Image (cartoon, rainbow, N blue to C red; front, side, top):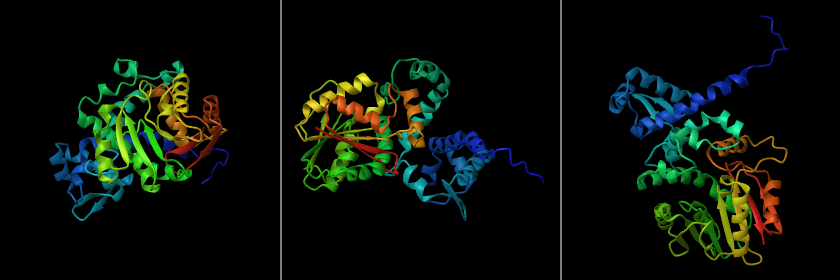
Length: 340
């Protein structure tokens, strides 16, 4: 058959056209309890549908689709989880991302439906989508259990990224790390596990700290890591010679970032440092794709955006920091180190 080489290959368009379907397939399987019900077993599709109160034919189609996208595999009696699904998509796994997936399904999926208006206006879509102003988590996390599940989703990300972040720069000269907005404490735990003389503080809003205490205790680091409640915009920062901001800077507009950086700089001794964990854009803004997609997500959901290394350097030098270094990774987070 004659092939016109002047016609571009449509594969990339077809792939992007289907991409949202793959995401929603995973979201729906998590939400319906498919991965939890499979657990460690091999389950017949009709039995699974009956257990979950779903149409048997439709459930079979969902299971087959999950096989096609690599999350479930066939077994002698029906279907079973892949190792990846068992680790990240089951709610009893310590590395689960289910809370963040549910948040993506219940919140971000709906907000991304208004992306065009976000781009027209240059602002987040909370009011348009849900009828209130601002990314107010309390509207969605009405119970401690819901908050903990979201934090465990972020913890799953942190288990992937934090061990890598704390090895990008030599932190051995520092004595006390304070992770501002530290959530479950995964960064502080990873740092203290790598640097034996380092002590740490997990600093976050009081209602978000229950899991941090649990994680610190399970890591056997109660004697080296304190868990402290507070608001890093409003309250005095705990004393430290190294502060960390993981997935924090990209949430805010520049005036708020400048306010926070100035506060951290003022609290640091000379020689003290600030470790920022964010996905850093290439200087020519051609990627990484993860960072560019996250920047659109920040537009839709927050006041902020992702930035290049040069943009971080400008912000940090304006705050007074004299030495700024950027280190990139292959995981969903890079790092920026600044020294006073």
